Image (cartoon, rainbow, N blue to C red; front, side, top):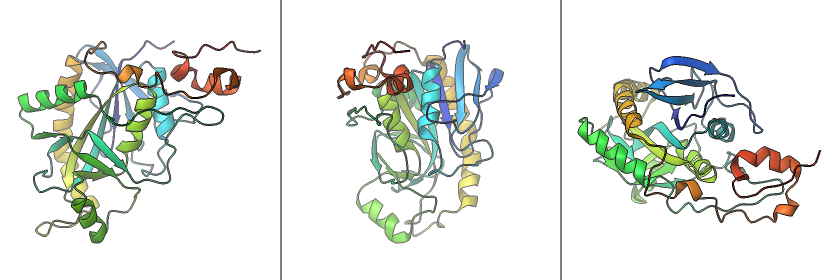
Length: 293
């Protein structure tokens, strides 16, 4: 039995580890398949933390191919309550510059190829996504980033495109006119699943480019993204390591840990044993079901 780990980190493009002490890889499986990569557990500032590479080490999975459900389920099963999601994004606003950090508080999900819920096959639940991120962790991260001298912006909307292609100029100008703040390919789905899992979800979006709307800068390219990711890596590690030392498992001021409380619609007597076993780490808090042999 693995000791419960309260803090989880998902790293995106270019973020493959956080320099753990006592690092150890763990291969796991879930009812939703295998996560993108083995889970890396270790110690940061005296706290046990688990890290997962979103795209796999070496970047093997495109945003559409990532098994988001398996990734977050695996973290939940280890006991993760606070989830830090690190991602690279393009900016849709002049003042959000490459290498800046954005902590969005809203999402616009425009994807169409992803599995986005755990509730299917005989069980239905509706969770509110009005406030998709944890306000307590967002405030904490914003304050810490300012204290350690990073350029950080709190709030704004992350537009989640499908990808893997970057935007056309027409698309990019449209997203800008719609007043979206940043654009990426992954994080909205993680926010939705984290809400179903009752996790405190903290997004840290690192700006790498201006997409292709900016008249005075080059259009986004893989080389541009990689170069700015290299600049962001140290900032990401510094911020996350400092943040972890301030995260408490009993944070007050948010209701993330009860987001599913009134969401399950299905009569418990109609939930099959197979479905219950699959979702037990998620729903056992609210539904106790006698298992048939």
